[in-house]
Length: 188
Length: 188
View: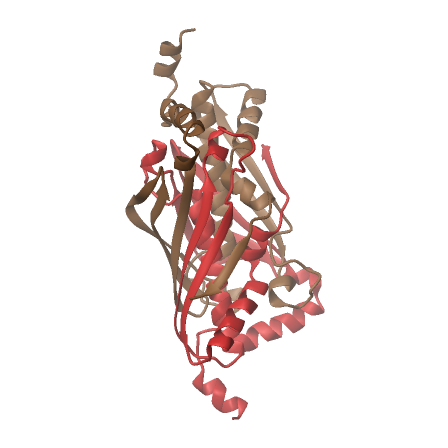
């Protein structure tokens, strides 16, 4: 097998050469690796809000997405709300889902594995007595998250399991959920 | 001041009476408080994916949002991707932003504070040498998140700060970010 042949054959749409180049470049320029991700939010009414995402900082400079992306959130009718959008905790699940899935595609490309289809279901338990303040021993957040992938790829089951494990190992959102992060909340 | 007068005057669009009723009901029926939030994700190409949110479980029964909500994610061009949507970590910021903001509206309603406008900016630092695998001592996720609210309301600065503090105390996503959660990732 030559690298050229396998590169021509496997295409998951991820530019692994560029990522490998970035890894090497940033190893020697750690200040360029310092990113700042941003969002702004505006309250609409009740539990309904709209977040906007456009600028970020990285590679030593201000950066801008190709477009401004907006994401609405609301609470469901069983919480006496209007259900105009997904709930905030479901947005977190979408963040985890998309982070792990992007990782699967990138790792597969790097390992010369052609993906045909990738999907996953996520389920997170939550005892809502926490957020309602009904029981101070109940945490507000998830009591656990289960992610189940279904992957059709040109690879053995072992190789597919190893792909998913490697994506998990390098996932930003998996790390954010499984480890504590300091969050400061202030009024301007 | 009578309760009836203030209820008629303050309207942030949150049905606090229903939430207080739910708190009381669920204190005596903890099994109904067990929710399951769900998402499914499908890989599109490269780092681009689409998550869908529709069903959840709670109050002892299967529940359904009024519509299926879809949320796309991608990586930016500086990661050699096509930037077709917000990044997964920005979705997490939108989740935090919307959770805290819904909480501000609910707590304000409960405290008879009329909100005129609520907005916030969020910024999260991240050293991308983690996700690139350039330095195993660098974590993959955020190194911290800063949320700054700007609130125009019929209340003193102290009362506004107390509002925001109470929202933080009851926020599911704030808890998810600041405390560890077990996440299992499997292949079907």
